[in-house]
Image 1 (cartoon, rainbow, N blue to C red):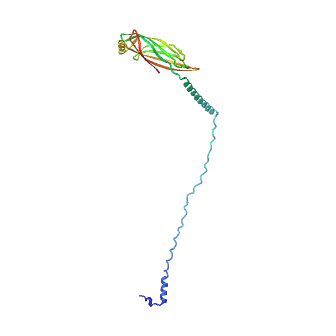
Image 2 (cartoon, rainbow, N blue to C red):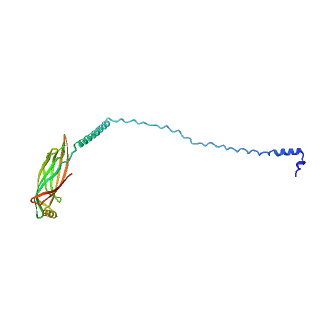
Image 3 (tube, one colour):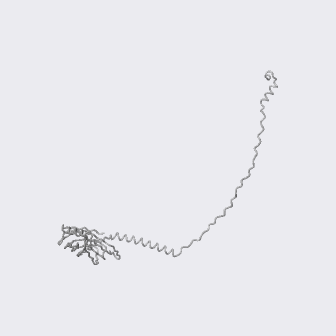
Length: 247
């Protein structure tokens, strides 16, 4: 056990205080880490790319024949457009209409069915042709009128060509004669029953080739007409009803 402070000399106390304030000697600094010399990584060297060469092909000059063909096509297109506009204007100005065919009157003179179902008949038909156009003349180049009973042909009439001026109508008498037309038994029996009931129904079909004329131009088309006729029994059969349609 050490000597108490009050018994120690001042010199001793002072030395001890000095010794207490002195720090203990520091540890020697650690040696610096050894540096490993890294060899630089050698990257593969790329050879410089060769400069790209743009090869310009010489442009082919358009031949005169190609220029001529292009000009002709362009001119033809312009002509077609102009012609279409002119035709449209003329159509709207003229307003063409098809002629009409109608049965103004008809008379059934005779109907006779003999064995084995041969049909004989005589009918007079009054047909009316009219041209409703105010600026167009028409010509009937071909005109055929046929008489049918239950879709069976009975008689036919072919008309010679004739012309009609604008706004004109024409009445034509047609004599439809049937001679020994063979009919199926059921059709012949139905015709006989209609004659007995005083109501005979016929069908008229017309096919016409019409030529329309306007100034210096003309065009042709076909016109078809169907008429349903109801007549009384012969020998004085008269027309009591009719219905016609044209297409």
